[in-house]
Length: 305
Image 1: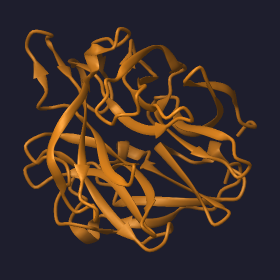
Image 2 (image 1 turned 90 degrees about the horizontal axis):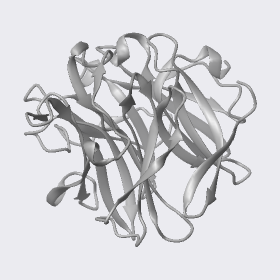
Image 3 (image 1 turned 180 degrees about the vertical axis):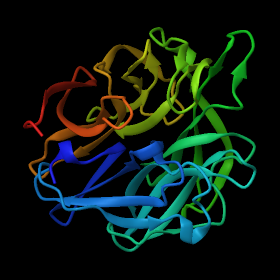
């Protein structure tokens, strides 16, 4: 299969044992009750295997609603998948799943979401800083309406995790609210949230990485006038709690988002995202990026997919 044949949202790639493994939200119905997630294998980011199911959500009674945004991290010799599902209190939460192989099968690490149960939390991502694991996630619709804004205002939040990733340690904190960015806008949501009556400052897809100068870069995706984009913020002192400075230059502004980053076989830094942000048209795309002046910048899209 080529990338143009693969219909997923929120693609996430790891390079392990000389192979690339790609995961994502099954494109049909935005992952609603689709029974879990697949993994694709490749040696070159161009030709991929047929999808192989790596998590069966129905088996664990987790196919009652959204199955969103799986990402896989190697941690202490095992593979951990973070993904969003309905929680027991009928909100959304990020669960952590575990496997001994990047091919799965993955199984839930605990019986409920790792994110706070009193909030609707999606798009959790794992980041290990100085040996300590943290989860960054989006606190978003439907429990984040701000009357003064007349809109739902998403927040990027974070929390320390226990060493075995089974619980949050201490209290989560708000990294920033999505309306703090100077280029963020309140936008009618036509997709996941169902129509023009829902206006939100989106806060999708946090992803954190350490740059060569020791600073931390956090990328995320909102909608700007129906254009799905990738924005970034930087903690220049390398502190997980910031302060985080919003970057006014968009990293990607061509109707694509939910970005993540990985190193290719030849050591190049690569950004992976889905585009366009249109139902049944979303496909994975790969871009070479470079670090310059303490930020990442897109050089080019990799060979036509």
